[in-house]
Length: 181
Image 1 (cartoon, helix red, strand yellow):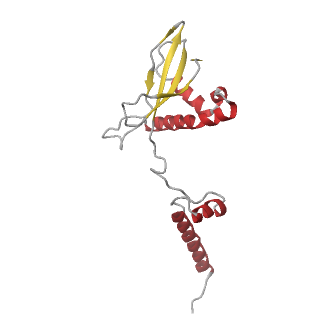
Image 2 (cartoon, helix red, strand yellow; image 1 turned 135 degrees about the horizontal axis):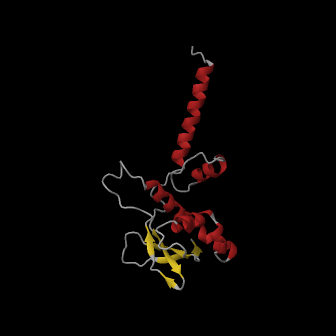
Image 3 (cartoon, helix red, strand yellow; image 1 turned 60 degrees about the vertical axis):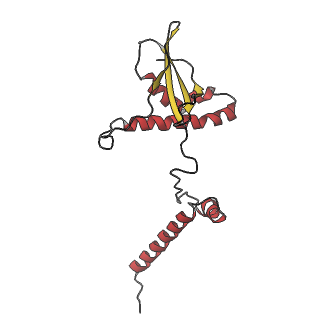
């Protein structure tokens, strides 16, 4: 007869818990079915069931562009684009020291863009957006990027284009006020 030791009971309980977690994860990867809805919203109170949607349901279809210009006295410079992403080289997999900085800036720009509708809905304008963390991080990055003169004001603009379709002109998302840098 099989003797159940405390170690065997412990291993059996852990195995059952992990098997149930794995099964629930598989069931929740499909569209919103009754089972996945029940598991996700009734059972998974601590959000322990992952939802892996790497390329779906809404893959990235837009490219964001971060542009800036300076104002000195009564003259304005041309708009300059600040690179959010970088071209991959053959050695990028081995040596890519700028990857983290570009990734952080790209994520912050996406966070800023996604927060714009909620600010418009709550306040009717974007004045309070200037006090949000993503706005301040973008402003910091733009204000430290290639200063042309020492005492000037800088304005940045966020625009979006439709990915690989280069024939479409970028559309304006956000135009900041001039900030002294």
